[in-house]
Image 1: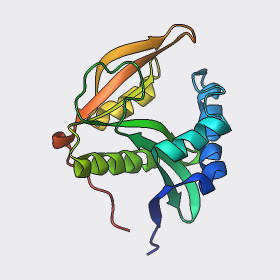
Image 2: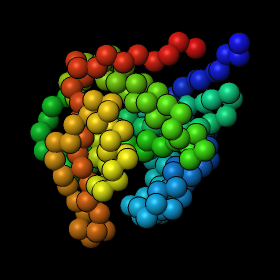
Image 3: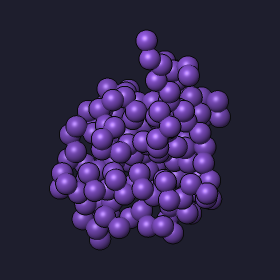
Length: 175
């Protein structure tokens, strides 16, 4: 029997090109489906800033980078109006050729365990509206749509998702 290796580690500026490559792959995939909200958003400068200011993780599968996610305790969109201690998620991406294999769930499980360890009460993020398959994925993972916010100047509207940390029952697979 073959053992598959999944490894997730926090990364820094030295992995800028790798993280940017995954985000660019996600952008190309979303654009192929007609979603343009990431178009020119993840510039080299923005990704470098994320690597300096947020916790950024890289998911490796069989030695190859396949996904990334960033977390922060700071609000990362203007959609959140309260000060409930939360972990905010951003830039969750899995390369298209590795999608639908459970890697997005592995990254969310990591975030959920981090939030629990930090004593956060909520996990929060926003995601583009009208992307039904993505919304269904988040809802299956136990997240609820709790509001909307938009960027009228960019013509994009987003759902606000959250999950109570205490409601989680997931664990990362042991590797």
